[in-house]
Image 1: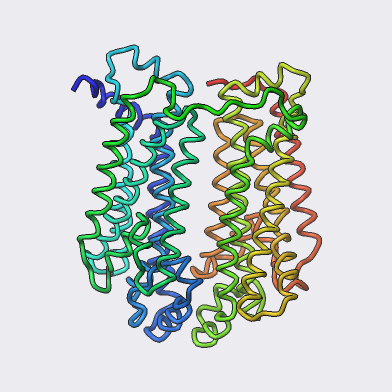
Image 2 (image 1 turned 120 degrees about the vertical axis):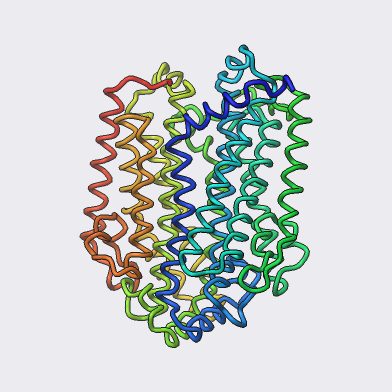
Length: 532
């Protein structure tokens, strides 16, 4: 038991460090379920309207992006939420758990703090156990909030708690996976990437399994992301699939315990790959360094967005029929043109633009990581100015964001072609998606200005993305004033039809982005580096 000495102290310390970050994660996931419970009955208020939605979801493409399709024959609100929302809450729950565990294990070793802490009376396995206990607390919060959110919509308590418990246990599975990957590599970024690769593989297995057969096949059962939906809540509730995440979590934690005893502090079990004797010429510039460090991230985002966009675009042929049978559904598309298909493409363009804005924020926040680890200080010790350093990084972020917009627009357009649309739709959707580039640049500018002012507040740029997402997708459904949506940089672009796109808002947004970027550069040049 000496291996676990001071675990309680480390848990209290971790709770103290994450007193802001953890409630935001848990609260955001809970609010996601609450909004679904509040908004869906507004759009689909009658059984007939829900059956129209069920027909829309009864296709391979929709199944790949939602769930196994239980309850489509009698599409109640509970079945709709489980089939369409649970997956998209399970993924951020998994991400929260992965980042939490890696932050308090491998990241602590990489910075040297773990070695300092273990020089005191602290057991060898106290830190991993403390991180897992913190993950249990966080996922218990997710389970409770999502269950209460569903019950607030007059859904059955037993089924609601089954969904909440399933989401919480799904998060624990990936927390255990992150505990294993933290033993394999010596870098926190690599440990997170490996664990996120497992999430991607789980999503793909579930998508292929659910699309192959109604209710899923063996591939679905291999994916932890599918197990909550396999409980069949609000259709034919069964509890035994919850044994799967419990068993996998226990096995992964046991494996992590064994692996942890076979390595030194700060080292990984997988040997670090030796680099080339001579660096490529591109690495002699800050821009080339930023591109090299984010190469894997850009490729991963590009593949994920393209696959998602392709599946989303293939649903375009069903939109007109769905809106004709359910006029309330047209409220979702009303700001993007009177034609339902144009509205659908406009909503998709907005959705992918917001996703890419999230990528842009993570890219800019890498500047904070570079500064904290001392890499920025080392680079600035050479013939690299502060202005060149930050502008090169922001320039790469802007270029990568435009590339992802192109990839997303191309995916939606090609998906629409596969469903029977004319080939000209590809170019139209590409232009509509690129129309949101100035809004994404504004998000980059906000993140840059906050980073230049003070690295610790740079994460506040997420508030811009969250605000834009809420008012972009829930403002019309909740009948909120249009003025609130106009405060978002994404509220000034009407992507479809193309004739509605005007140059003035795009020019103004680009100018605002430029001013914010320059302000961030000036602030960065005037402040001290933050190595805390």
